[in-house]
Length: 151
Image 1 (tube, rainbow, N blue to C red):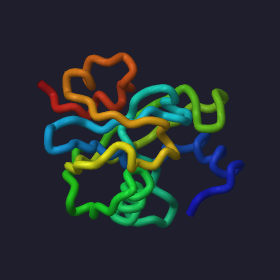
Image 2 (tube, one colour):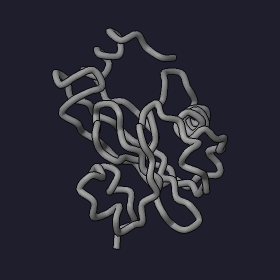
Image 3 (spheres, rainbow, N blue to C red):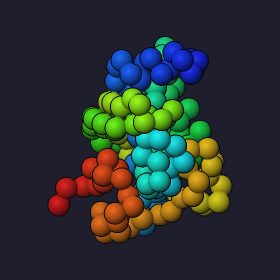
């Protein structure tokens, strides 16, 4: 269930949000990143993803987020679990007055797709990044860089 703005503001100010991040790679090994429209992480390249809603089972949240963020259907069983992460931000979706804390479940999936077909709700642009560019770019958010394999 989506929350009314005032309720959601209270939730963000009071508790961590649980989310799923999608580490999307193509068959060439490049990573899909979107240029964030909204706070937090606005103005950075970031992996697709979003929060799990109240009373929403994880497998349903996963398929919903893949559909919303990538415009395709992928079942949770077709993804590989990458780990649990925590993201801390000094701002939140509605401004700078409140910090945001996410507990993130990261899943990796391999998909070849055209960038022109991707939804533009959370991201204004998309790009495939090679691992070196992903790792070295100052425009890629540090929380997304955590998902790269450790060398």
